[in-house]
Amino acid sequence: MSHIDPDVAALIAMGEPVATPAERTHLAECASCAAEVAALARTVAVGRSVGGDAALLTPPPRVWDAISSELGFDEAVAPEPAAAQHAVRRGSRGSRPRRRLLLALVGAAAAVVIVAGVWTSVSLLTPRPQIVAEATLDGFPSWQGAAGEAVLEKVDGHRRVVVTLDASVPADGYREVWLIASDGSALVSLGVLDGATGEFAVPDDVDLSTFTLVDISQEETGGDPGHSGDSIVRGELTAA
Ligand SMILES: [Zn+2]
Image (cartoon, rainbow, N blue to C red; front, side, top):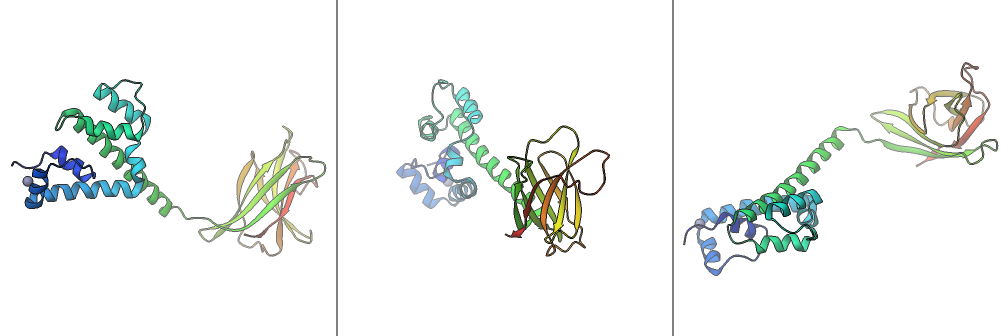
């Protein structure tokens, strides 16, 4: 017989039980066809190892739309994995639409591999912050319902505090974030909190075994640069 049809080779590589006895015999004897199936199988395996079967057989809806309009399927056909698989089997052997469907499936798998690859590179290049301590920020009596949290992170050798504030604050004035010594004897301003969340670098000379309290205050525009004494929330950092 002639070499195995490339479409059939692709289906065999995907694990579809489509090979006829003659094709199986040919595959066992023809190095060229065996190599082709093996190469395709490696591509399929990479796609599956990254995205799993589900990702391969359940492409996004727009992929299915493109496939179904290409094949002239009724719009009502649900994009079930089973339907997609059925479509693979139902195309006549070697027909163009089936080849397009295979290309679409291989394309979807390749997209998964590319996205995963980019994601991995980005996470390898971006230093991963290490969470050192956390604080639950409790509202002061004059700020009923206010709450927040603070996370002390170490990233790239430097420390930073990430704060979140959940409070109904006035339109005038601004919010300032502070580190306060546990005995209240000293305080350091980290900066102005613009909005509900912010990241603040902790100066390298600040001893965090002394400055354990995170405080967010309400400040008057143009007022004294020190702490107004009007704390909205405060909490103590504890090792994570
Ligand atoms: Zn062959």
